[in-house]
Length: 146
Image (tube, rainbow, N blue to C red; front, side, top):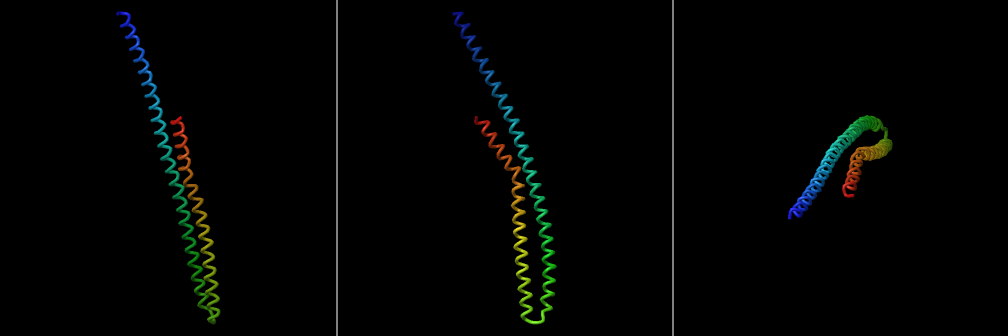
């Protein structure tokens, strides 16, 4: 009887030791995972700030370009109006007006293409830090699911 009690006590101590070891390993793994998630969150926040800074800089540049184009277009319109007003005949008036309209349209289309390209580049640059974080999240999921 004493021998079976010793065996049961030894077995209980063994199970308890294994359980404690398993709990300690789980707690350590949880702590490490929590630290990794905290670092990941901070890196993601930093990426969002960087992305916002890139987007703000691009918006400032675009705003300056729009202002410069608007001033140039206004000056060209005033000059064209003066030129059209100096027409000596209806035919000359229509020719000058048509030339200005064609020039204004072509100029705007070229400027719009330039702005479109600039916005595409700015969007790509602004989204790069976010894209890197998405890739990092995918890698983290792969690590935890493995």
